[in-house]
Image (cartoon, rainbow, N blue to C red; front, side, top):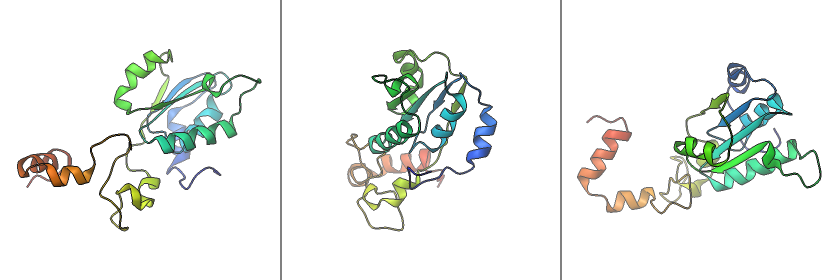
Length: 171
């Protein structure tokens, strides 16, 4: 895939399990750089629609560019949005975004949960244990709360509660 530094793991298996057909409405809740979405669009086109969520605006822009290069509008003046609806948001807003965009009921939804390679590979994002960088760890760079702010301003009890609740550390 010429767009990215990242190739989706188990792409064929994931796509096969979605059982995609032409004309389906599909939601990719973890768009990333568009690897899964490109294959989804190839299977649901020409009549299908894809909504793709990503919190990282840089990845969203790269995915939009990549997908429009692979699936250009058929007629002059027609936008890519008729086939692909990019959403800069957390997938927790799935229901409201489907309504807002008049997407209709999805026939399939993909959640590729886990950390994205571009975030770990870029030391400025603060996700890597292997590279020096700021303690950031934000998918959405517009958010103000960084890992550094949490570590340096939350009290011991609040930090312990976070680690217990989200870090799967019971002691």
